[in-house]
Length: 454
Image (cartoon, rainbow, N blue to C red):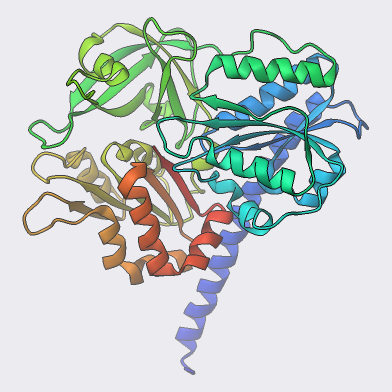
């Protein structure tokens, strides 16, 4: 143990800084919960203790949005309802509610959303005492993944093994299928005895027009990637870094849409995102990516809305920020470092991976400018097809494990964006190797490790 007073002062300062960051994170989480409580209070008459509980487990915001739609529809039909994140509940609270409606997303290959990782680990490993609880479950998923609605199915099984009784069979939704959602509405009407509105759709799309399109990687050995920019037509939208743009496809029904991580800020006056041209097995371009990158002309209008994605919002500027991603995932990280422009901040470190430095150094000039201006305080890149490199982005974590741990000790938040297959799992494994599995789990459960992967 040292007797050097300077070392003691530095140690004390580090402890105080860590405590301040913890306090800020806790304050932001409480502010989010308070906002949800205020929204819920608008649906429930004062003093009504019998409001129907609507719980959600959301990764990109869709389950939360459907939870509020469910509660609003019930309230309009005369059934008071309150909305709560599933991860904020305990089994005793579920049982005390008597009846609960749950909207739960599956992320990746059968996993639950990050926000319910603690709930899953703490309660779902063994049956709980939920005798007397009745529930209904709307499970959201995507059939292109092997374990379709995996978390919803696991949650359903746990509830029933715990003694809870389903009000009706689990409703599974494939990619916002309107037929499945209408079935959920119908079943709610049967259970509550109050008709739920028949035409239940997300908020309407706004009009935007394409104003810029730039090919980011000409000559790349991988798929062509494009930076697109859209200006609003007749409206003034607002969003924050981490939110998602949902764009309607031409000639498709209301559910025909694609989601993209927003790479810009409202102050830019336009929404930007990065799209990679996908190719079908027969060589033809993908429906959405082909239209956006090849067929849509500059100046032409599109239908789009920007949706809140609370699970990928960033920390306040004073909190150190570690950004990790690959490919088009750079879009979901870009708005976060740009949001720190002109402000004193706790540091922003970007680790990014792509194929070749000659063709796939996405936004290279912008990244160098951000580093020079201080928006980014550190930049590390890996190129898997370059001779003498051959690294994927997770290798950067392994090679900088000590520095990464030091940033985490200072209270850093980690945001990961990019491909689900390969990158996401590789980055997670590298973080566990660098920090320990328990610490990574703690970071996830406290909102300091967030992902937007697809």
